[in-house]
Length: 109
Image: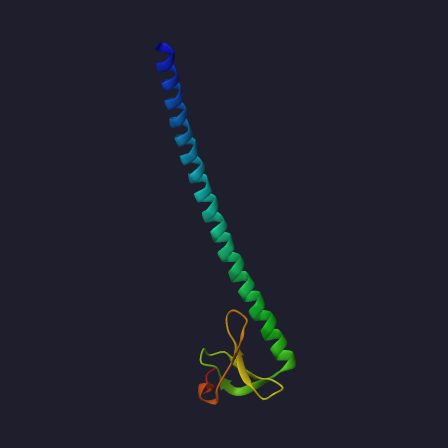
């Protein structure tokens, strides 16, 4: 009888200990996950800026700048070899424009 109570008590202590360790391990994973998530956001932001700078640099060398005109977001408009007008967004992608989307650049800019 004493042996049975002893085994039940030992088993319950083991279960409590495993639940405690599991909870602590999950908290550590959550903290680590948040750190990785923040690092991922920063890396994505840096990657987008790098792509934007690279594409703008290429556009300035290869394509002509449309003087006196700006895109809907206020950035420069470029003309490629096929006479297509485009601007470069914040992620480094070329966004082609219709004639109705191109605006005249204000005198102060």
